[in-house]
Length: 402
Image (tube, rainbow, N blue to C red; front, side):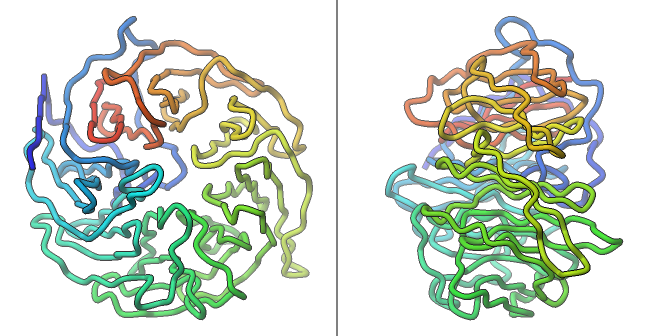
């Protein structure tokens, strides 16, 4: 295999994030980054291109980036690989982890989770493993389908592993093993959850804090669940069953309430944690924001996201459920937030700098990636050390936005 690597300029600067884990969705897995002093507008043709990596194969895996470089998954022929590049664009190692998804939307899905010198990943066919992040050597490996009876869901496993203290949380979806926690050092099974035939629904779980306690918040095919991380005890759950068994977007938690959304016309719901009754009480439904895979961001009381059915951007008042705006000024896509700005990567390959406000957003700058997408661009953008990383299939571009 071959790689074409072009780095036009690179200056090593201090790592800006205080988080010790590099993972899907940024430091807190919610698309919110901590970088500041970013450009308020871009040149007409976009910000300066400072790097490009090609040859990583097909897929929608976003890179995870830390001081050691970039980690990303891709498919070459029919085989999945984990790649590690340093910040100069040099390939440090590659690891062949098994077959990858060859049906519609071929290639890798989830993003690696990197903590210190260990990398964790779960491939589309359930290959879950831990690697030495410096060498790519296997520390432990298992298959979620073979060992825990997980069914191969329609679009394959897309989950990005969650680290909590000494645990790795994953969702095999098998009988008796709907959700599991492994010891992150050994791969030994620590706890399991069995929730009445529920299975993986493409969701990457998050950690929230409620009532002074850290809690796992996630979706399965049937339930929105809040889970005690160290024991696997289900604290609260709500029925979110739908025809497509698709609940990919991690919900948003805010002040005792949880905002859920799913695509294919399902729409959004707000639940309130009822500690007295041990239930999640439905406050409202909103049909306009049916967010499928692009993520949601809560900004100044408004939930922003891309609607799947109508193919537009929507803002919903978190407290009331009122639809505050709907906009077709940009195609739908994924996005992140930092320095009071949205950085949007649309499904059609356009990158936009956007200033949000409670009832909408203003597009400040926009440009199109060098390769016009022949298929939908689903990988989420990543921000690291003043650079915006955009992946489309076998290419990753790095733009200086600071």
